[in-house]
Length: 216
Image 1: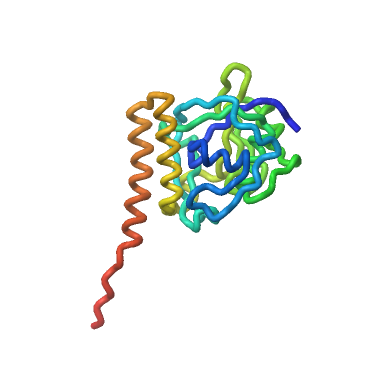
Image 2: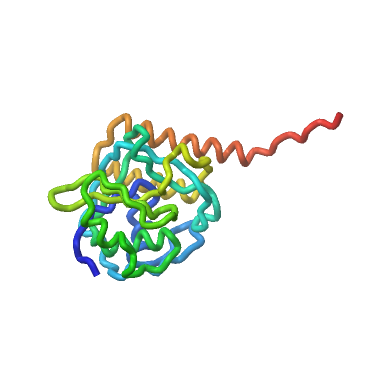
């Protein structure tokens, strides 16, 4: 049980503090199909701060939590920047959030709990093939690492998919919280809104009935 602290950097729906609370205290986010057990340590974050990540997000896969639709992933090799929120939590809580992202109950066997505190900055380490099992050590604030998890593949390696609207709502609420505590660069705002607008446009196009093919 690690009481070491990390800054968990969320770039997706967990930017919304009430959504993250479901991973820590347990519960079901509005619009979701899954109720989470919560972390072994249910304490709220000790602090939070808005930041910008140098890479970009993309949407891929199909979410079982939101009834299908794409999920946000971070590609640190694609130019950004993109807004994010960092939460000061224990390494144990970080591992428990990652377990629940993978639809597993929290467990003391998750190696992220120790790796998050031990690996150097700019490390990327996969602890499994799952969608959120690749640890990125982004930076340090004082002695505390800034860490996140993402997919083992990059943006160009997989088809992009359209997120469902409840999921996009969580991202928008999270971004508003980031804006309330920090001033985002125009490039970050543009990049984030471009990703969400593209996703919304694809969703609308997919929902528009197409004319039947003419019989000849």
